[in-house]
Length: 391
Image (cartoon, rainbow, N blue to C red; front, side, top):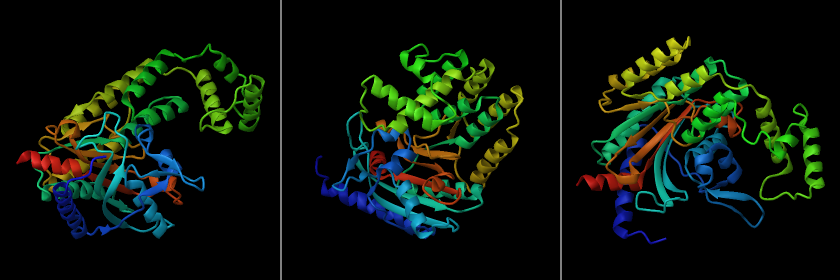
C-alpha cells in the first residue's frame, strides 16, 4: 500500500478535528474502541455484503479475529462493557480507521484502510427525536467541514418489515425475505422463485437425502448427516461444522415442503419496492398500495410523515431528498430509518456518510433486551475529496 502523503494526512487530521469537535459540542463523548475485534461477532451481525470483504485471521492462540470493517459494532460493545444492563442513555463519537477489501481495486475514495468519523446514540426512548438529531448532526458536521450541494437519501427498513408482517406469507418465507432484503438481486430472484413454486435442485441427490431428515429432531438429523457423510466417504471441508451442515440441510428440506408464495402477494411486494421519489410522493404511493392490498400500514406511515415533518421544522433542506423503499444500505443490523449523504459527482465515492437505526443489535451482542440505538459514520477520505472537488 502506498504511503500517505504528509499533505493528505494533515488535511484529514484537520478535517477530523472539525468533525469531532462538532460532535463533542453536541454532547457526544469521544471514544476509541479496539481495532481488533472478535471475528464471529462481526460475521454474525454485518451481513453478506460486508462479510466477504472483512479481513479475518487467526492469532497464535487459535482465536479468530478481524480488522474492524466498521465502528458501530465496536462502539456498541464498548457501551455494553460500561452498561451491561443496557439501561442508560449514552452518546459517543469517534474517529479512526476501518478496513475492507475492495473488489474493484482500491482508489482514493475506496481505500482498503480508511477513516470513519461518526456518532452513536444509545437508549433514547423518543426514537423520532433521536432519528432527527442524528440526521441533523451528520449534515451539520459535513457542512462544518466545507461540504455543499450534497443530496440526502432515505429508507425505512421498519416499514418494509411492517409490510411483510401484514401480508399473508408462510413464516419461513417471511424470514427469508427479511434476510435477503439487503441483497436486491438475490431478493428479487428469491421472490420470483417463491411465487412460481420453484425449488432449485428439488430433484437432486442432496434433495432426496434432505427429505429423509427428521425436521423435528435436530440431534437425530445430525446423526443422519454424519452417517451419510461417512457412508459416502465425504470428509468435512472448509470451516463448516457438522452442526452447520445439518442446519443448512434441514433448512433446505423445509423449503422443499413449504407452499409457494401467492403471486398477488409477490406483486404487492414488487410494487412496494419500486417506490422512489420525494418523501411526500412516496408516502402517498405506499398508502395507495396498502389500501389496494387491504393492509393497514397507517401507524408506520404516520411515523414516517411525523419524522419528515420534524426534519422540516428543524430547517433540514429536503428539496432534493429521495426516499426509496428498497434502500437499506448494506449492513444487516439496521432495523428502521436509514439515510445517506451523497455527492453524485464524486465518481464511485458518491456516498459521503450514512447511518441508521439498529434497535436489535445490542441484544444480539449480549444485552438483556433490545435497546433503541442509531448511528452515522462519515467516510472522511471521501468527504475530503468532495470538498476539494468543489474548489
